[in-house]
Image (cartoon, rainbow, N blue to C red):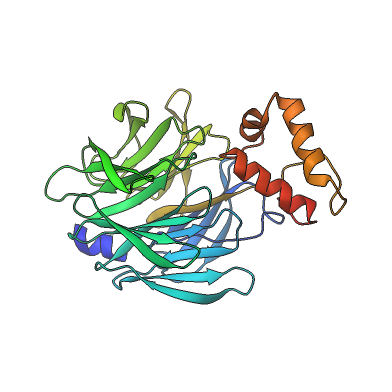
Length: 335
């Protein structure tokens, strides 16, 4: 039952221009075959979008140019060009059932889990769209998330019939440097923008584990709804959204206190989050004018006392992400 359910679990997301959407959370609902859109400012469902059952993991490159999709029950990843919405490459990754996908903050690599008992993660070079490494992890790896600084990757491993564990991969060497024991059947995983904490959804135990990345130990356990699968952190790092597939709702957690702020009813069997889409951040400078990038960077650095502080204040995961957004703005596009 668990294995067959996991095989059809769709971890999909909708990709839309940042200029047309506020900061919304997108949740796929497996049985009702639709997507609930939550306004994170009010924690209410503002739209329900009918869709078909999607693929597994989905991840977007930082520049928004490409989308990587793990295809369930077939060992390859599809690459979509967002400018034309067409598949431009198909990458064999080995294994039996690609599941989770995550892109490094610099957009250079994609990490793909294989949820079969073979237990490995494939590393894709986005410049060539080829697999450059295969990393052994635990049994049945599912969720995957990269830290904001790009130094580590966290992977949940189901390990049935044994308790779940989280594998920690060092991206510099593509080797496992730590294994963190958990309880239940773990699925979704997300890292806070400051890189200090990791949140893991434990399906069988109906809770979320909070991991301190400095020590790679569990520092808190938060009760949530029934069969939690998906987990995502808002860009400002203040809230965590957990999709509970058994209770058809979403729990909103305050990261400062690890307390539940709200419970939002959604569709049938919500599975996971795609992305939080924000309005363009305001920058100094004038689009398409010479020197726009320099003026924007210097203005933000002066305003916030340095670029790291500016990136955090503007809701970006890193200084490069902030700089990329400024570049896009100065070319006349949306950040």
